[in-house]
Image (cartoon, rainbow, N blue to C red; front, side, top):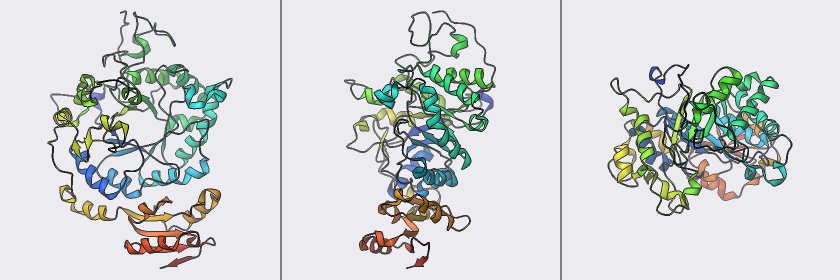
Length: 446
């Protein structure tokens, strides 16, 4: 293979103190309870995890207590809304949830997923004469709202290669943002990428397009390497550098997997992720306990903020349970136990926590929950009115889930006449302090 000489112009990450180690949490939005916190917080702390990728529903927020307790442990949430740009929900319906996340400290918000694939858009929309322009039209309102609230919009991960070649798609989108003079969006934008190896070694494509100038979109050659490997972030960094004259922060998903986890389900006798040599090597370069004065971190660019492994855990009935590193807080196999240096032990209990005050908070992890009526989406102005009534400094959790509301210290029941009588009874029986808020914003303690 022919490889050009390459020397980095950016500062070595050895001079940057950052914990890039992260995991994808459950591949659903169902595991945000007190028991889940009790199970996972001690383990995540033991592993020195710095990031956790969380998938958010669009109809309710992940509980405030879950988000805040991650942050107290030094873990930054990466919130994903992986809906299609062709049929997204109304921004006004999701905007209060995004605003709440950012108020709680979850600043990194990703919207959409793989917009360079035909299946993402559907056959009809895929025929749009300029798909990059169409995507910018869809993405900008979300990005602007995230920035307005004080967060960082995360550009969705592209499918490496893809129906619309990913490097070309990213280059075109950034050029459009420049042409439209979206300076504030560009200044706050983070990138993301699927760091699949495509069965290549971890060094595949290292150095980006400067090292491999003969790489071409939609073209495979035995004489050159391209972005379809773990080093995809260096190619995206080079694109940003060429267009906006600086790299953009980037987050890696599915780090070290050979391909999309969905395709791995169809591979007979596929090894567990922790048994894959590439992941074992990669994990060892990111594990904070391996980084010392004599063993510095791998020479990754400072723009690489997080590297997230698939998959922390999954429900027993999930097809992805085969990929889970841990099940009920215990290592799934000897490879996980050895790699993460975690002995097989019983499920964690509150006594496992080092911080006694944290245990107390976990008993009722949500401070204030606003329980919205079932038809709230038809009256989005109601949410803004409700939030305007919150005292200064109050950061309530918004949602329609009774199972989450009962975990709160205080609950505001909006338009109580729209709820079944047993809802109020269950809230009071759980020990919540309950207030009702009528449509005219008249508050009544119960």
